[in-house]
Length: 242
Length: 242
DNA sequence: GCATTTAAATTGTCAGACAATTACCTTTCA
DNA sequence: TGAAAGGTAATTGTCTGACAATTTAAATGC
Image (tube, rainbow over all chains, first blue to last red; front, side, top):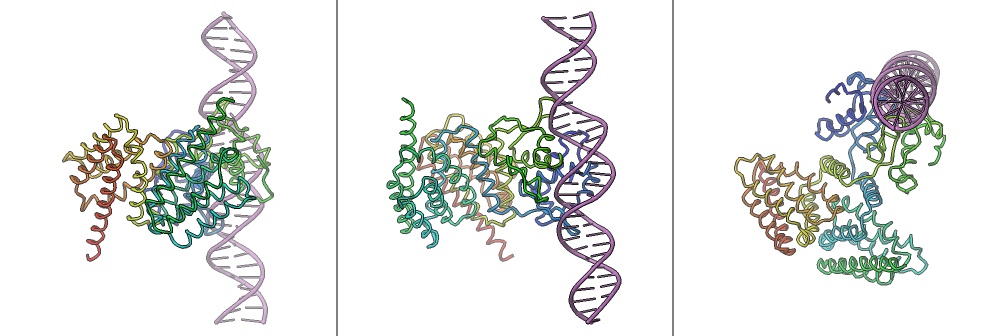
């Protein structure tokens, strides 16, 4: 850990960066205990408040965890894939909502990434993943389902497809792509969507994956992507003249 | 914004979550000014310190920015793709280093995602992206290049390929996949890698993209993936008996 | 009208105090 | 001897008050 310059602004940011760099570089291994707040305050020659604000910045990124008590303190946290999922989804959602990304761009990215998983999913899918996909597809066929529940089930279906690839790195990357799209898909749900067509495609995809058919899976996913894009264009075209 | 319960622990985390939810829900639009720290302290009935720690948590996620002075305060920050790149790379790097993901798994994910970009890159690549890819490939052929510089150029080549797809959402997603792999690739650089083979493949990829050949690009990327996996296996096999 | 000065608002930092929690040690009693 | 009870120290969590630094806006003087 390095000492801060004489610049008396952004002290907590500087301290946070120093500790963060130490964690990334491996100088502070997982579960290592950081010095106490008082010790760090003395070491960096700042107040305990500044140290605390720095630690809160790191805690917000799940880089450390804190524990009260005699043997307590701040510990380097093992960043788990499950923790990163949430951050990924939040960030993706905000990126989409704050940067007016077009539906076409977001949809293209989503299906491009999902199709990247298709061959792996077709090769490795377990009976469990397949059962989840089929269960969700059948749920989507129920007539009384609300739009929100249909969308949630849609997300669950695609999550199962992604997880079927058996690669946690891919699952992490796809979390944002799949789950952040749900609000955008709601945009269409209210108007033009044909649930029957989507359910049929989902069942086709499940069958293709059941048969380990990589090419078939990819083709059906491409069809679903095209249909989704077409729906969006229809909705936009309908809104234009009004 | 809601009020906190009577639980006097994790106050700053609760406040941060309340504000974060308000931002995600859209109740606080971009560039909206939050109340001053003193006002929030009174509103939530906590001390200014707790409010400040909550704000630091949000600042660490680039959700807000702060400004001193009379018309200063905390403002909802527009999350930009460039900001998210860095977070994505950091998170991916830590996930890989802290969860002992196998090289095979990480490499598989990386090339699966990159191949998802290939058809789009082949279709849309600008002269600029193509020039960057070829320039990096030629730089990699220079004899005096250090291993670190070769790796950096390798990353730049693949970044250009991804950016050539012209989809900022894809570029964001791929940032972690491409850049977080650099340390893992260094593992191999020291031993078995043939630069000539890699440069040749890079030039083939650039040619395929120049000719808008989606299938050729994908095939060459698949070849590069296979070669990389093979290298890793060789290194592991060589270390085993020793 | 324009430049200068002054005031006010706001975040950034500091110092000190107390509360809450937890591990560890000591004492006491069976 | 063993175990339960209690006390002690260390550490984070929170509060209060103060001052410094910065920036905008208003007031003032020419």
